[in-house]
Image (cartoon, rainbow, N blue to C red; front, side, top):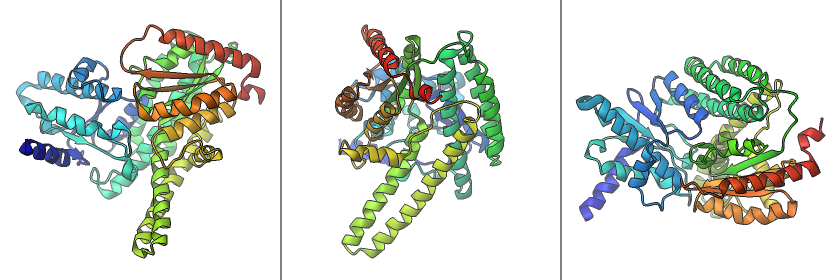
Length: 454
């Protein structure tokens, strides 16, 4: 037993982490469809053979090797990698070599179970002798998803800039889709358009990203936005605006959340989902907050050398955050000359919201920080309803629900909890339909803030 435990810890330390990705097949699980394909294009531009794995088809495999107590995204992604490797082994036969692959599974710090996915999946992979040598590439929110060890230092810096831009552009394409699909001239036209747009932007990041031609990438984006805007039928009146927050995987993975945005649209909504860039910015912001706390403690204890280390971290993360927010602002500014799309909330503003009545604290961490403050800000901005999407039993989202429900009740804004675990609940669509009836009533009484401004 002791030998097995030692072997497991050795596997976790040696086969989970940051590895050189050149000359490997880099396997990316699909979370946000557009974002994953743009990120894969970025990796390919820097000489990495990146592949977005087919998702959800291996769910039965994922459930077979989990107990059901894990977070639902863990079951989905476990099934994705097991099915992919099974298919590769069948395709390649004796030429199959697991050392040729690196499976990408980042992690987050704190109490969320996401921090344990790659550890658990390492144990599962080690239970297959033929998959023991498959490495898991793990970036962590502890250092704001540093790429150290994956690329050379200079290339790593450039890749990080391009990768962040790909995240922001993917958010824009998502928000463009949600803006035009409820008002499309012909059914299905918006979905067909966004598939073409995703392929074009993936190619743009692959060819222009390594050169640092950000203007060229944004020019391609402007062409796509202009085309997308032409899909809107101006005779269709604006609809109730619904804000979505929640656990980052479930709220963006259309299979895992049973395409809730499309269902909301079916019953008359225009939807805005929280972005991926918001989470990336949050991890940088949170590391800077921790460094500031470290400075204060070091100063109290007169530990000057420790204080200097924390000051250096504040400067580093501060520069990163400023770059990210300025780049994000620049992208949205260019796009908004063509079509009105909602921008992300600033992290400092969201933290200020939580401090107003001591609602919650960024010190606690997790996505609850963003979800609680995000929904309050949605309500203040005139949204007609808010939805909290999350895995069944998710701790941060359960906390969010318990705090936000009474607040939305006082603000008279419709609220819906939407937990998912892979099962199809017969009453779910009825709950969404009821929620949308309430949102329609709110819309009739209060209109929409963006409509009032016109």
